[in-house]
Image 1 (cartoon, rainbow, N blue to C red):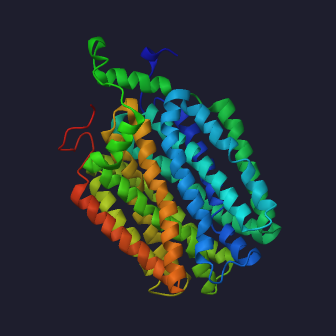
Image 2: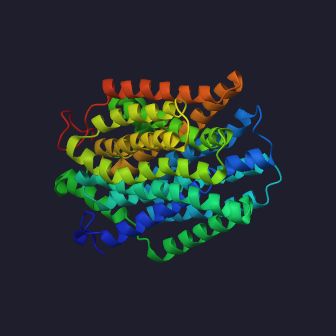
Image 3: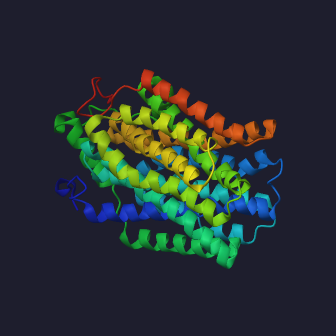
Length: 427
């Protein structure tokens, strides 16, 4: 299809948009299968439940640092090779995961599996979002991010519950193996036969934004380091959003590492813990159908700040009561806070970046964001290990979220194209 026939918008590209939503759902299933089952494997088979908090956190540390690095490279790589090839590469890196878990002889096999998961998530999840942003209009970024994260994190919740039941009926490793290999093979098949390359839309959007023929070179290409510098510290708005992205992953890290352990210590079984943790993912995912479009109307900054505070409050409230209902409510509050902030951080970065380097900018933002898994997990492990109590890890996350939200209040100016008061950074 020639570039002059390309159309933008969700409705105009509904088929490909839906295919990409299915892809991110499968990506979410892949990470979701490693959520509450893996900590159970740690405690039941490798004996990490007693005074091994740092070692327990090691698999999320590996995941965070590797996924963050892959996010950084995925943006620039996709601008050279194309979104589809990078997406497919991400799925090929997922293939060893079920086998490593099935045949694991010690905890380090699980860490290796999580490293492959980090590569898969960094490449595949990044491309599903980038491709959808390529296809749609600038005023739909909040909606696009909301739909993308809804699909992915609803799948995380589904996988957490389903694998808990499969672990109970088939055994922890066997259940996870069959769930994982089925998901990954299906994803690879669908990429080959249904996904289209979206770089032509990027070229079309860039030409439209840059102006008529005489002005096509008005936006000079910028290097990867230049993009990294702008997103990381030079642009105060980008810095505010990047640090918030990093810190909010502390919430996801504690849900992944210590929520299962905490709930099992309180007397819940694996299925009950799976439901409580699943509520976090379900509320997070489903609420983004509202919070993403909401930011297209009220702006990005208010939902982001509110989300940082609500999510931090949800984490600390886990310690303030007892019973499944209380823990489920606390989990839901943390999930709703994540729904307010998560899609809108990405949308804010996409607002600021020019289409010609938007994928790289999102890659840098996602680098810092998912580095939060590694930094957060390390902080959680050290906090729990040094004190001997995982409860202090909950306080660590809550305080970090409150401080980070305050930074966004100070530096994170509004970025929505129709609402912002500052000029977009395009040069």
